[in-house]
Length: 125
Image 1 (tube, one colour):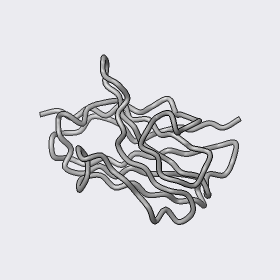
Image 2 (cartoon, rainbow, N blue to C red):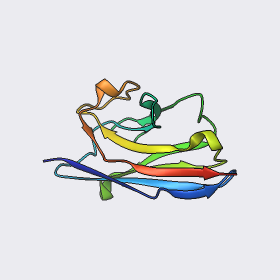
Image 3 (cartoon, one colour):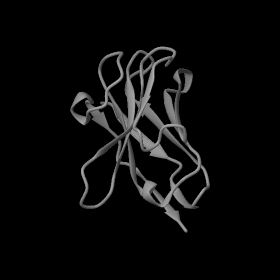
Image 4 (cartoon, helix red, strand yellow):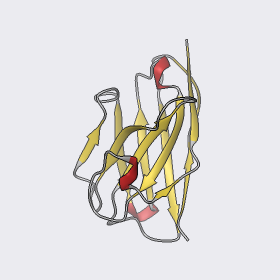
């Protein structure tokens, strides 16, 4: 049974930073692609960032976060991170990590098999 647990969310001021973590249990994620998505009430799940398996040399970001967020992975800890800088009010959402059962980078939620429960990020003015 695979489980993904996110942490690191919280309340931060506009312009601030947070680092989210997603730790997997039940199997090694070292050769598998991972992604971060976000969702606000009444809105569809939105792609944020993705990283390929292995060393994670291939990443992708949504236009909304490009240049502000960085996805990385630490396979020894079975963990993926999302460093979020220069946070804006519109970044407020629940952030969910996801695991796909292949090596690649995926932008669509349907390409991921396992999901965490999410961690809430609230950006205040």
